[in-house]
Length: 474
Image (tube, rainbow, N blue to C red):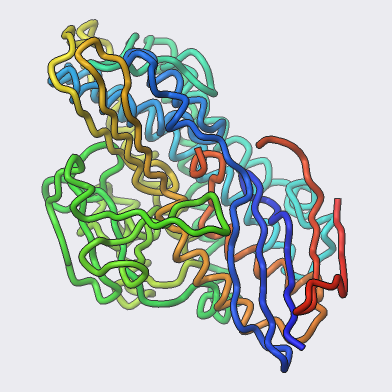
């Protein structure tokens, strides 16, 4: 009898979701689906709001990556005002985004994924978390906390708040970086760099141990998309879109993000609130692509900063030039932390950060604006339409987690086919399926645009809907 296993909710991710695994009559996996079960509706309730409020409002989409929404929204506003923001404002925005990448990647690696990597897939669930990591690897855990704190301090120094800073605005930013804050960041930078280098060394020491997981945790051909700079370099704030395939071949390049709809379509499934963007020229679902750290390191031609460039070259060599395993999102995050820290070091020496010319004044000059930047989890688009008074008439936000939706479903199915046999699944097997999702570091609050605490619930249903087995974890 065909059976269905339900994992609800998936744990150690931002937000709530469940996984349904369908077994065939012989007890083998026939299909697997990743469902996002929360809904927020930011796109609709932003309608009617003034353009000037949008950066502050959309920063509330998420408490993990508010800076990403703040900056993409402000950039959409820049287009509607039809202004070039002052150079100091752009550099300050870049600095805040680098701080955001550091703090978010540190959270993902040290707090959410390191328990699996260092304590083991089959370790006791009660210990396989940040507290268990603190007990078993106290120095690593403390380092991760300090690294995340460093990124948050940059955000706070610029925006006045670690979470939801109302700082970037259409036309620029509200304030410069105070000299005292700049010195504080400089003082803490060497420690942050040491942590990043040590974390990279420790992760690379685990690669042989987890070589099997690297082959089956979302290892498949796909397209990759991200922003790149004028010379194809790694980019995080501005730039043009580039699509490459799993062989490293460039399919589309130098795309103005304002033209994203020519290349990105959005499909909807009835079993999830999460949309499924796809590369329009190949159609749905053949146009599956991945975004985020893995994709950014695949689409760029170099990283420019010396320490990260060296690590990137080794990373690409290990992956035969294009890295296709979603397991290596962890590796890519650590390289991006290092690259971000090096760029922070460069920016802190720029005298323009203290400039008082921070904002271009203008009214509504265009009725449409698209702002795009690289959030920690991947390329983020804010697309606004306004009337002549600047009132929002339509909003479309394409979130990184949604763009990875097709790949996350493929990852869950690939892992499930390797590990699950029959109507019962050991907890360690369940954790491997969840770990495949955690590799993408999905942010479900962002992507569905409710809140609450739910226990982990796994339900096994027969073909007729009868409950055959149930496991709960608090």
